[in-house]
Each structure stands twice: as C-alpha cells, then as structure tokens.
Length: 172
Image 1 (tube, rainbow, N blue to C red):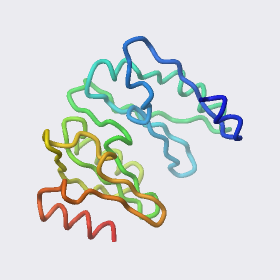
Image 2 (tube, rainbow, N blue to C red):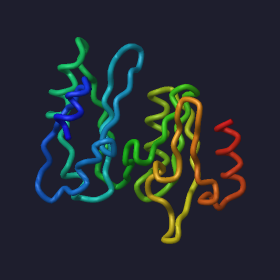
Image 3 (cartoon, one colour):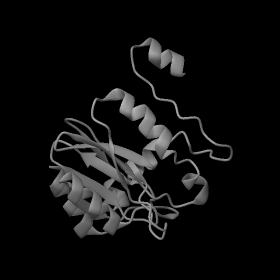
C-alpha cells in the first residue's frame, strides 16, 4: 500500500510497529502536529491501555518529522503517569477554520488534558458525552467529522439536550 501511495506523489512516513500492537495502524491516537507561532510542535498523548502505549515511538517519529522541515519540532509530552488518557485525534475533532476542538468525554478522553492542549494551540474546547448501545463512545471520530464546508455528526448519540444544542450551535 505504501508503494501505491508514494506512486501518486504522496510522501509517506513509515514507523515499524512492535509485536502485539494491533492498533499501531492508528498513530493519530498517540500524536498530533501543530504549528504555533511558526514553530512546529508534536503533542504526545497518553494512551488508555498498555498495548497502545507500546506503540509510541517519539524518537523515531521526530527523526522522520524533522527531515521535513528546517525548524525542528518541539515536543509537548502529556503522558505523565498514565492516570489520565487523551487519545489524540481519535478523541479530538479539530475545526481548524474556527479554532474549535470537539471531544466526547470517555475514559480515553480526559477534559483537563484536552483543555491544556486547547490552551496551547489557541482553540476553544467543546465537550459532550455521546453513547452507543454499549455505553459512552470512546472516540469522537466515530460520531463526528468536520470538513471544509461540511460536518457529519450523529446527534442522536448525544443524549443530553443541552450538550446536543451546544454542539449544533457551535457547528453552525
């Protein structure tokens, strides 16, 4: 697959995964990149489970990212003691045009850590809780997507009328 993508002129960074890390194909959960005052940053997020934590390769990622720019990336590592989780762009939906981050609260989406990220990047944080048949939805990206002129949201998963109206109002 990498060869096909590269054949279409798209640059691909490959980080080999460790054994027993089946979700390593989702690196967006453990890091995101942001440009703050013309300085590139990489945020490293605390993962909820040990096998997801085993995927994280900060040094290898920085080695690859720093090849792409003349200004080296600065790292903001939020992992701490893993008492809280914040699984990157699985739990964050960034609306870059309106500088807003949406997040459905769950064990994988800590509001305090999310607010730290939003404060650093200058975004407003909108939190709510969404549910499926099994309970709280753990990743916001399964119920919300934001494009340039379009947002797709499963409003029926937001049980609180107040939270649902907040999401609708903020998206408009």
